Length: 139
Image 1 (tube, rainbow, N blue to C red):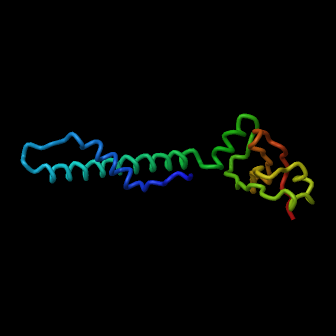
Image 2 (cartoon, helix red, strand yellow; image 1 turned 135 degrees about the vertical axis):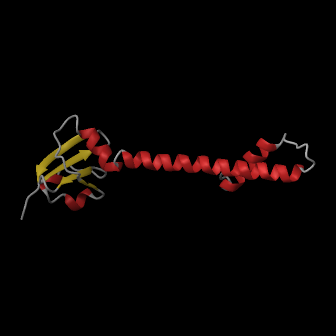
């Protein structure tokens, strides 16, 4: 039996209904007041969700994304060039096996390519180790 997916709007409606169950009004217009409260709570929940999503996105971008994470992991161990590297992921090591630098490469390894410094770093995230560092050959 597969899990049934409930749309986000339905989840919000259920939360709002639970929050407003015990609310009654003295003004004689309970339906209007209850609808206003439900609408207000939906807006508040939507704002909270948007703030969480925006904060997560900002946090990820502020840390520099994948490039920032990789350089932060390697900086304590190596004097990396000051430029921002290009990052590539090895997806098929067999295509690279003819080049000696990639002889120890595995699928999932990361390449940090420093074009101005003419260096390339082969990093294996699965074990957290640098496998090889080499100069980039200029033609």
